[in-house]
Length: 72
Ligand SMILES: [Zn+2]
Figure 1 (cartoon, rainbow, N blue to C red):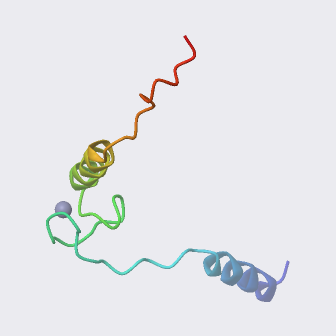
Figure 2: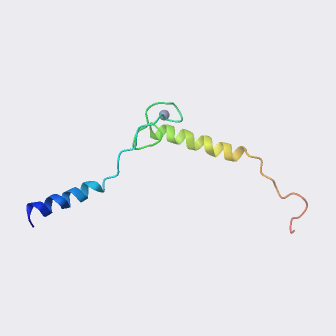
Figure 3: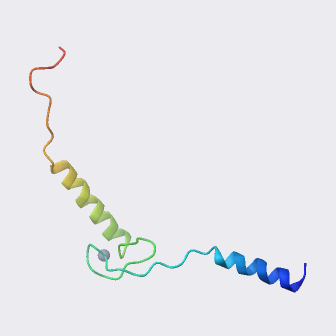
């Protein structure tokens, strides 16, 4: 392999690296986001938001099947 080939191989390898995402404000606490927990600043804020999302889902009234249509 010539030096030239090695250089182009290295260039294409670095081209595959995904660009860094720009830090954004954490939706939970407005701190700078971290790459690990994007778009949140930390795992904690990620969990907080997830829990909030779940509790909102659970607070949506569920239409229950109590019209006397049970198959008993
Ligand atoms: Zn946060």
